[in-house]
Length: 403
Image 1 (cartoon, rainbow, N blue to C red):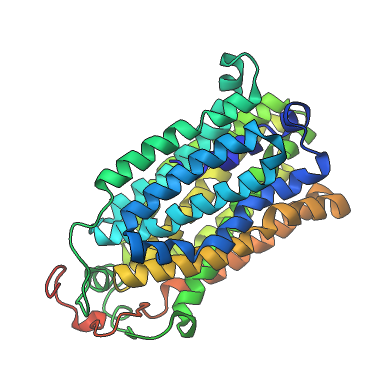
Image 2 (image 1 turned 180 degrees about the horizontal axis):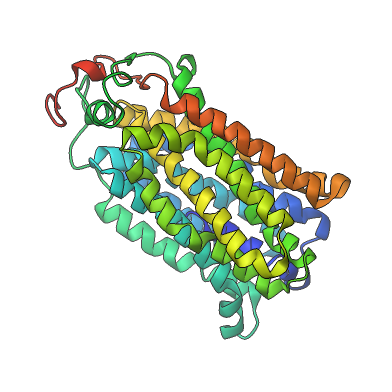
């Protein structure tokens, strides 16, 4: 829940940043893209630190760093950009280790769904509560932004106490991920495992990375500019911020259910490519729909995009042979994926200036169709494995045997 408010609180208060914090208008697109760029640059840090400190302690330290960044960037306005970058790096460190923690603790599809739903809930709270918090705090936007350091500290305490693995991951193992994937996708897909190969030589790893990056590009493009677009359609700034929060709230059930549905082979084969088509349709609906219909249209877009994020997290867990592979695949998919996603907010700004909102939304719809293609290859390739001695899914014993 701490891995999105640092972004959506800024998106929900774009208008006040100039007056209260002195942020120059020309730097707003950079401010929107900066945390996503930090995601791509800092992705390798999570697995590297986890090898030395443990995953739980690394995530706890990242949450403390996030709290510091959230306070510093508003108390010292000159550090808004560096503080936002630091917040993005902290978020990425926690985000990249999340699939590894789920895998190490033998989390089911429901736990993956709960985690992905937490992203959406945090995003909704950040966008929806920033203005009420500002009102409660006497109109102070800096104080309202700094308040989000409190849940970050709470998250650090909880993950430090309870974030460790229940069992060690030593050496060659018959891992439950292969068995669960065999059960979920059927014998015709699961046996195609190649243990011990480098990630960059495995096509499925690139497909999962493309899926993650494209859905993230769409998400950050929408969350960065949806409020501004809605204002251009005649809504007030407050109504636009409320609809941005609704965008995240509407998608909460989808982010929970998508990883659960991914365990059904027939549904998964349809769901991954179909989501891209649904996102494209929803984007064009928001573009062409009248102001009075935006509540329903924005809600539909939130459902489609949140399902895509939930499925992206699930694919990292499902397509990895074990915790070590899940951590590496998560770093690759989120690192390269978020580097790609950083182009979303900037690209929308450039396209809007040249072609207007129509050009920007049609370009995003094209990206959504590429997402559908990436989803198809992600669910039809081999299981990803870098763990020497890991059995193929066809040979895998029931979960827990041999570990």
